[in-house]
Amino acid sequence: MNLDLAGKTALVTGSTAGIGLAIATRLASEGADVIVNGRTEERVSKAMAASGAAHGLAADLASEEGFRLCTERFPQVDILVNNLGIFEAKPFGDISDADWHRFFDVNVVSGIRLCRHYLAPMLAQDWGRIVFISSESGLQIPTEMIHYGMSKTAQLAVSRGLAETTAGSAVTVNAVLPGPTSSEGVSAFVDQMAREGGQGRDAFEKAFFQTVRPSSILQRFITPDEIAAVVTFVCSPLAAAINGTSLKADGGVVRSIA
Image: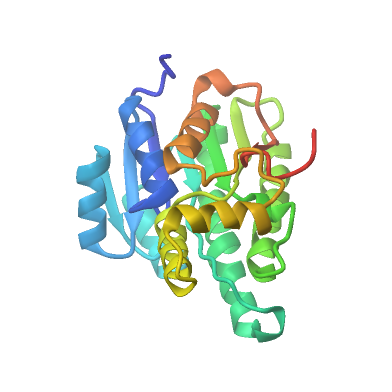
């Protein structure tokens, strides 16, 4: 299928590995001029080579300095994928005020800043795509990382509110909600937990979905490429009728028909 993305400029934040890298690679394969982003030149260079991206941006987009660098180098984009994010498992009683602020700043405010800059030019040219990479954890808050779930719920609120401002235009704002995905961070976490439990990775994965995410219909970790396929379609002109929506790509973890 031709997704008609040739000539579109796409910024994918946090895209040197995992879901972000997969999205950048898929967008580039569809002809988009992709900007990959990470915090170091080394990781950005590797991601450019792996993805076929046209541009690289080494900057911490959770900071105001990184935001300024980004918008000065790339004052306008057609597609913005807010993928930058952090996660960690931590008991609620151990989550400090600083942790709450850090998760909100990185996972939510970083995307808000970029939207505040890029949305107006999209509306002026009457075409654009903004996608927040949220999570099923934004709907089913995990007890082992409530601060992460909070930030992912906040992304849903922001994306829906921004979509309301695009009424009557060819600009869309949506959120995609992956389920448990074998991203770089998750894979490292799974390997560590499997070692500590004296299990092989396959045995740990099976036990994880039986006990931690038993509602999963897929009963395995989703691959980053599977998430990227959904996001790339949402970014395309073919998805013009999808706006203000939270699209689940969660493997059936969320028990809801809406």
